[in-house]
Image 1 (cartoon, protein in one colour):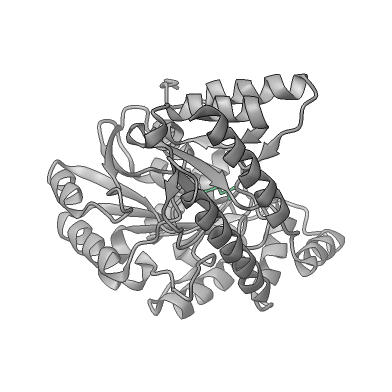
Image 2 (image 1 turned 30 degrees about the vertical axis):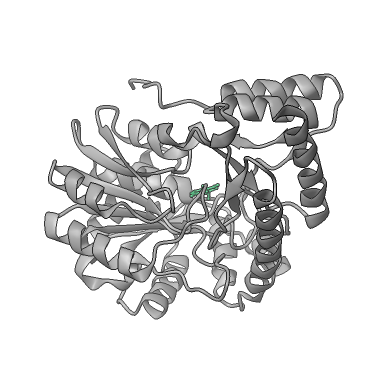
Length: 386
Ligand SMILES: Cc1ncc(COP(=O)(O)O)c(C=O)c1O
């Protein structure tokens, strides 16, 4: 396969070197980089997995996923979105990334154009190129207030785009589409026959009593809609690798074909453990979201009180983007200097899109005391350097 430059294990090279140097010198790192929940997988999921192993659920499964789990996901989607979904419209995948990647592989052909809403999750450009090395990536940047640039979408759909990739609540900004934005995107894409690949991994981690609006609520786009989701963030299961695509049956069949010929299936007992998620309330998410909301509010207030730094309060997810434009530094240089002087490891905005070099992403999936320490160090860093 052609390995295009987008396919890299380290989209943030310069900054990663700074972290390595500090580690080597035995100095502390305060990581605000990782997007992993700081709570544990619920016990009932662990127990269900152990039980599945004991019951011998250790053999190959259907490449599209066990029917029991696909039925749970289809029922839950039907209830949540008010649009009927069947188990053959679900494909179980090893994580959300895999759901997105294999859906792209199922629909893309050489020369196809893919519109990417940026700033975006770092893996999207690479997964587009893994799915179809000769695909062309066209970006649609969010406006500076994080609203969606509808004019740009209208411009790109008329240039023959096959698929639009969106992610709301968004990594890295925490921005969330309004219902009006979702509806207009649905209308434009339905009118031009454009697929929407909507990564809704943070759909349950939403703040201020707002509600996430799923693209799956709109029947008119159903035959051109792929939802990528899973349990990595909602149930602290990043290492379990359990996700799924909700998509038209023919796309799910192709995903199954891809899986059958590569990784065969998601570990069978992990799929069975996944069924237990639908037999329990998801109360822990409300508690965790409240904690995250408090961290966001604290961080937002403190960052905006520091001269030359600013940010917009996220509506969901784990991340906060700090605007560093007034420092005059590139995001790579800012992050490298920040980690060198303070040990705070963050992610440079350039990793999320070339127009986002004036930003630095902080993951707030870390305890509040850590965030308080971090803020004190950032205040000192800014005083010393600007
Ligand atoms: C938007 C987005 N999609 C997908 C993923 C990866 O999910 P998974 O670990 O289930 O592949 C992440 C992880 O940070 C993410 O932020």
